[in-house]
Image (cartoon, rainbow, N blue to C red; front, side):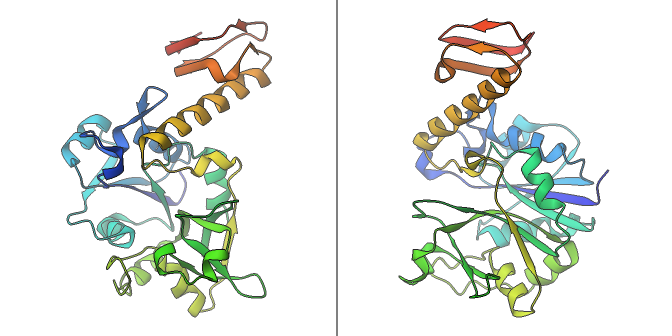
Amino acid sequence: MSDLDIVVLAAGKGTRMKSSIPKVLHQIAGKPMLSHVIEAAESLDPKAIVLVVGHEADAVKKSIGGDNYIFVTQSPQLGTGHAVLQAKPFLEAKKTLILYGDVPCISHDTLAKLSASPAQISILTQVVENPTGYGRILRSKGGNITSIVEEKDASDEQQKSREINTGILCLDTELLKNFLRQMSNENTQKEYYLTDVIRFASQKNIAIDSCEPISAHEVIGVNSKQHLAIVEREYQRSAADKLMNDGVTIVDPARIDIRGTLTCDSEVHIDVGCIFEGDVH
């Protein structure tokens, strides 16, 4: 067991999904997005997994089930910093990793790399062609991370940064608890931003490490049905690539759907339009 606690933020309503189903329960590859995130979290063998729920909390709890998780409710929902604050009483490990229930493709390897950093704070960032809609990573002339600014609060110059905040970070638990006490909602949205911890650390000259995801699609967040479709295809393409790397022939990787686990011998040939559900061998 690692000296790590994991907090998964899963309280949002997901207004742009235009659905009565809680956002994190929309499915990728036949199971809720939140389940994919929990599987990635469990692969790190943490001391505790704390799930922060809010909108349709009972439905989320019922869908996920199990006695292996700690559920806490965020109500009202006043931002990511406020969400993590609800989990604070249950954080006892040396480090805390923050994940999101609507980022279902995050992998074990990326999270293992992030959480293994010796720095007191390590953040997952990504350089993208079009950073519109994302918080920007700001660095000093020496390349050190100084802060993260939300797009609505960013100046024209700050919005030119193409390095974005994925929201996923790992930090010393005592440091996190200290910073949570310092947060305020003096911003455009009047919310408590978890990103403030980066600014606090920079002000105290605490080194902030960063790394990028192993695969770019891992950090795509789902906020609409369009995003859901994009992530579904990225997930399926990744699953197809793994099979092909093991010697399986797939006629068209864009036309295969695996909703469960598919195990094949290397000489297997999969034609177009195939759907696999459950555990298939």
